[in-house]
Structures are given as C-alpha cells and as structure tokens.
Image 1 (cartoon, rainbow, N blue to C red):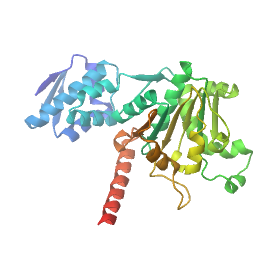
Image 2 (tube, one colour; image 1 turned 90 degrees about the vertical axis):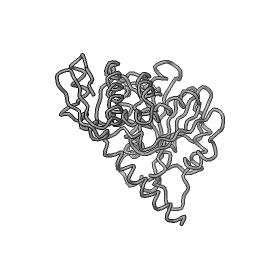
Image 3 (tube, rainbow, N blue to C red; image 1 turned 180 degrees about the horizontal axis):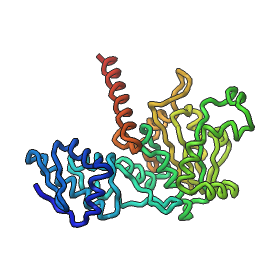
Image 4 (cartoon, one colour; image 1 turned 180 degrees about the vertical axis):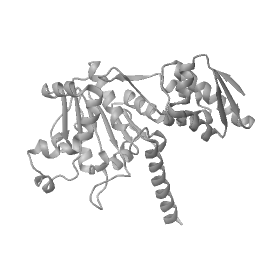
Length: 321
C-alpha cells in the first residue's frame, strides 16, 4: 500500500523525533512503514494495512490543521480510528478553550476531556472524577481563566482541603497562609501556566483571584465567581455539603477528585463519593468520569493507572466469589 505526502515537513512531523511516532504506528498496528522521499509504503496484512492507512490519513489531516503529533497522541488517535471514531479525532482538536499567557491554545486531548468541558459549559456545577494525569484541574483552571477573560464572572476562587489540618499544621513554621501553601501549590502551578506568575500576582492583590484552603469557605456566599474545589476526595461529607451550599448567583463550580487516592482517616467517608451518588441526575449538575484512557501525562502514568485499576478489579472479583 502506498501513500504520498506532498509536504516533507509534515512527513517529518508524522515520523516524529528519532522516529518515535513511526515506532508507535508499527507496534500498535502490526505493520512495517517505509518512508521513501515523499512516499509512505505500508507492509502487512490487508486488514492491518487498511487500518494503518486510515490512521495515517487522520494524522495528516490533524497536521494540516496545525496539530503536532507525539507518541501518546498517536497512540490515542490509533485507538479512536480502530473504534471507528476518526471523525471525532478531528473534532477533538478544533475547540480552543483559552489561550495561555504565552499565546498557546489550550485544547482537549481526549474524548473524555471533551465531554468534561462540555459538561462545564452546560451545567452550573460539574463533578469530575478520575485518576491522576487526566487534566481535571488544569482544564478547570483553563475554563476559569476563559470565563474571567470573557467577563462571565468577576473572580476566580480555587480551594482544596488540607487533610493534615488542625494540630499537625501547628507544628509547621510560619503563619496560616504559609502553613497551607504546600497544599495549594498544584493550583498555583496550573494558574501560573495559564495566566503567568505576574498576572496571577496582580489578580491576587486585587482580590480577583483567591487561592485558599477549604476551611476558609465556611460562612461565605460565593456569587459571580468561578469556583474550583480540587482534591475533593479528601473532603468529608460535611465539608462537601458546606462547600456546595456556598454557591451564589452567577457562579459556576467545578469539583474534581480521584476516589482511588483518599487520604482521609480510616473509616471516614469521602464527601466526593457521596456527592456523586446523591447529586447525579439533578438538572444543572453534571457528573464526568474520566478514565485511564484520558491520562495525558507521560505514557508511563497511563500504564501505572491501568495496572492499579486492574489489580483493584481482581481484588473486587475475588471478594465476590
């Protein structure tokens, strides 16, 4: 089977640095791909060659739209084409959520992320559960930055529980802000990447941007704000109810967490798990479940997540026998 690529630059992007993309294509599709000038020759069974051609054509279309290819993205595109969803692969990268402070577009990278963003746009409250590396926090901050930029809200409030609250925090040096700062650092990282350190600092000084521990939310009514509760698996049911009832007029709220990484004391229920069970199906509330397929960090993270999930499944099945 023979394909032609008129733009040799696109062909270089298709192959990848040190032929990494090409290696993924050959490994995943059980074919041999030979590049001769502007020609792409595919060797393998008829079925494998046909699937490989579809995948390569889809990747070429993405390149023509300005999308860069790397091994994780190539692997994900192959999985979509294999399932007959090559049209969704093209749709996936069309939506720009926001431009970060460097002027680079922030986009979804998986179908799960795309559904997550759609849920945020449709609902006043979105509960997002999923493993580490699925972009829950990063995309939530991107949506918040976009809403502030478009003047849909007047401020952004980011919060997360400090599970070591109380007496343990007292042994740390510094005032309360310095004590809780380590727990809020991941939120700062996402903010800095989206808005830049200088802009984030200016917005904080003006009160437009607030990053605070969950305990600081008690007794407040949060109106005309974009509110993100991160690491919500470490809230108690009482804390979760307290937080959700802070929501005011003109506000939008995202609650994110990973139910497999609960750090609460043994025997304590997770407020996130309970909230998903109680609130799913209520109009205006969306529940989005991301999976290992939506991991966009290093591909090794996806394998780690899948390995742990498989082990948990085996343990659950064994208990049911």
